[in-house]
Image 1 (cartoon, rainbow, N blue to C red):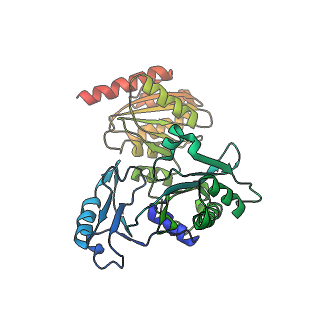
Image 2 (image 1 turned 180 degrees about the horizontal axis):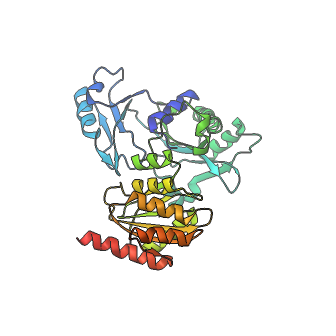
Image 3 (image 1 turned 90 degrees about the vertical axis):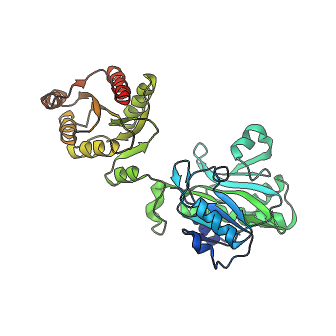
Amino acid sequence: MKLHEYQAKELFAKYAIPIQKGVVIDRPEQVDGLALKYPLVLKAQVLVGGRGKAGGIKLAATAAEARRHAATILGMEIKGEKVRRLLVAEAAELGAEYYVAFTVDRAARRMAVITSAAGGIDIEEVARTTPDQIVRSTADPFLGVQSYHTRQLGRRIGLSGSLLSDYVGITTALYRLCVAEDAELAEINPLAVVAGRLLAVDAKVIIDDNAVYRHPSLPKNEELTELEAAARAEGLSYVELEGDLAIIGNGAGLVMSTLDMVAYFGGRPANFLDVGGGATTENMKQAIEIVVRKPGVRGLFINIFGGITRCDDIARGIVDARPPVGMVVRLTGTNEEEGRRILQAAGVHAYVDPEEAAQRAVTLTAGAGRQ
């Protein structure tokens, strides 16, 4: 679960990590009367990167300029996500910029800390071009991260004196946040020198989805699209993509192989939905209704290999849903003959060979696009 920058900074404040003074607004007129000192920085609150390049971060020297920027940014789309809120904060004159983050190292089964003197830019680019600038370590799950650990890290990226003391306090606090809030990632980029002290100028936090139930005060997950939220409410696994062919399967492995087959034959999946094992007639009907609601869908490919899942239940769901787009069905497994009989009675042919069905689905969708 990704948090917006302002939400991540609220967590930072809870753990005494220094941040800029700021306010969240959702209307341009709210800029008036803010108890903030100019100049201000206005930052779009979206769950995607590239805000600055897209025009989602602006500096304002006056209230009139701030209102103008707010009116421009609010409502704009950045990588398909509409800007509904702005973080308005006091601008800071940045000196040296550093990077620090904790993330889960699944191979080591520990939290890893990554830090660098090359903050303020994409850490992946730093790793690719100048890997010697990155310092990495892992936290002992029993000892945690102690001040002497972070002091060593700070010295390795060139810090000393009061800046090193600030770094020790901030980094150990960031680790405590990760553990207490079940974070998969907690990142400060940049951790900048402002007026001789270190300040968390930006913030990124991702909470483990499996631990969200332990944190009832967390905000609603805005990372999901409307259809993803609808699928989750029905207990279905759904992901949106960029193409025009909707895909339904049962089981993650089958769905992934179906995506590969569709791509091999030149198709472009619009989304995919895994109804899972033991899917019922109602599950199947709901799945179809969800995937075809995505704008731009011109075809539907249903690929079912029945084990726990019964083919006759799937067939009844397909017939009940009556999708409004061209459909190709591949059906094999438990109660296959009954499933085929149900589909045949409704005028639906069920393929046995998955590659043949995938090729037909791609051809059918391409034909629908030419009409």
